[in-house]
Amino acid sequence: MALLERLSIHSMFYKIKDILTDNGFDTEGDDRTATVLMKFPEKINEFATMIKPIFVVKYEEGSNVPVQIGSDDCTQCTFNIDVYAKDDGQRDDLGYLLRRSLMNHTFTVYNFNDGFPSIIGDYSGISTKGKMTVEQTSFINFDELLDEVELSHHQEVRLTVKLPIDA
Image 1 (tube, rainbow, N blue to C red):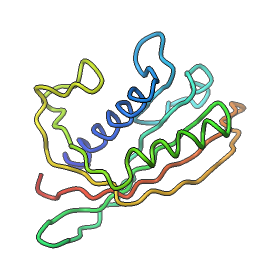
Image 2 (cartoon, rainbow, N blue to C red):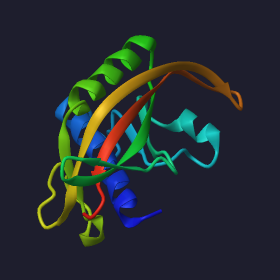
Image 3 (cartoon, helix red, strand yellow):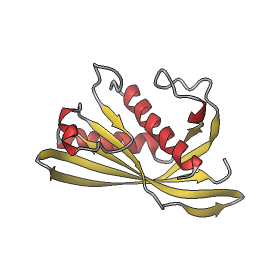
Image 4 (cartoon, rainbow, N blue to C red):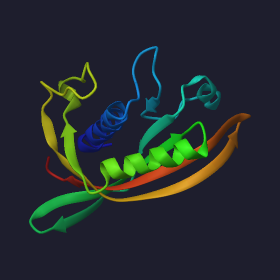
């Protein structure tokens, strides 16, 4: 995976944490009210011990498609954010929260090789590698039963994102 894709995953991960924090969720520490992950746990039964809602930020491998819009060289990629909520109402509310917060918005890709924020939302001292723009969102709702761990109230939020090629 190229550097820009890896940095964009981290940037999306922290953007989701920022959105949740701005909307009253605590994503850090022992008193957390939401869980944000960059990959699925190795053992699916680990979900049972996590605080819901759970957000899993995934970059869709092989989704890079070079495009040229005007004079901007960029690549189009896809992120999938899996939302596991307490019930269908919370799932739908959180899906629409992500859509409202991300759709047609441009936000910064940070160079997390410089370090990571010690406080959610504080990126001081971390350089930037460009901007990413969410161009399209879609939803898929699921109800699943995996390895006897109920993962119902599941929604996948799919984001089509434009990234600069030479950031």
